[in-house]
Length: 248
View 1 (cartoon, one colour):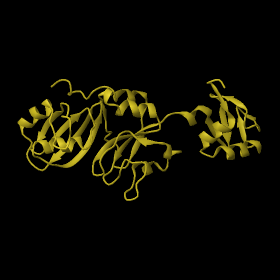
View 2 (cartoon, rainbow, N blue to C red; view 1 turned 180 degrees about the vertical axis):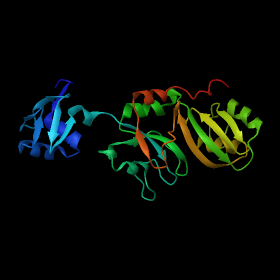
View 3 (cartoon, helix red, strand yellow; view 1 turned 45 degrees about the vertical axis):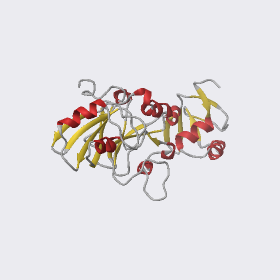
View 4 (cartoon, rainbow, N blue to C red; view 1 turned 45 degrees about the horizontal axis):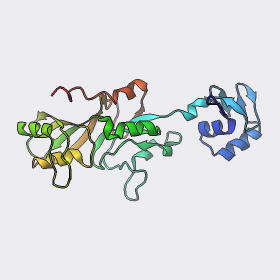
């Protein structure tokens, strides 16, 4: 089958979020039209640019195959796993989105960490963002138990070794905002990385919120638990480092 064509039953199933066998049944019943023509053969090949109408709802055939990328302002108390028996999962915040169960979090935020996380059904993009080779920067707003001092800035930049880790952390950018508040930018995304960096300097993170992935900033318009779909320009920002990371 040519790349610019697809079976009608597959197009109906994807666009109207119904099982393939049910799509075939309603097509055979004469309930589906393509470019204003009723087609009753589920195996009929149609152009991916065709317009499909079912029950008065018109869609473009290709829309059901478009990869979706969302920015979510993650609330505390949610986990980024695909399933969890004890805690609510991030994906369920997208219950109003068609085929939301096919989407996954890009990386993870701890259950008590809030802020920017991506949710997508684009596996290639997910891999690009999370791969260590991509060196995508992630920037967090941190509130600590004790004072953050200038010496910490230098230690973060050099890279720190945590007693529970075999390898040193790569250099991180620490920007002090106030006595107990700072921005931290990392590139590795290792387990509990920001929290453990502060443990290395005998401090403790009490609040953690991710504000940036690359140069893409968490929208000020999103309350916790709200999300918005991203466009190509937004996605490009993911791979542009946080502006101050390479200036220090």
